[in-house]
Length: 107
Image (cartoon, rainbow, N blue to C red; front, top):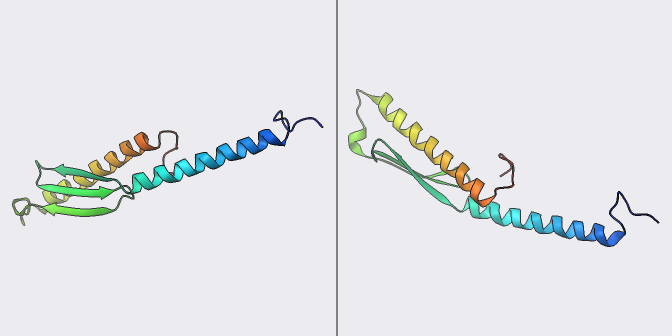
């Protein structure tokens, strides 16, 4: 009997299945490594600092007292947003290093 779509006998199909399983296992290891990573970001010259893990959870947020000005809450909000956005960008870059062949949004 001729092969299926040019794959030949069942041996080649088994090999493809094993390769897919290995790829899936590696993807899971890479995902776990990313999720266990932590990035540090800061804004305002270190006035606001954030630590974020690869699951995009904030694990620490530090705000220096001098960053808190009741007359300028908007500045503090901007510093926090800048810090969080930088941490997210770092996670994206780390994901590209750890999992370069996985399309964005799949982890």
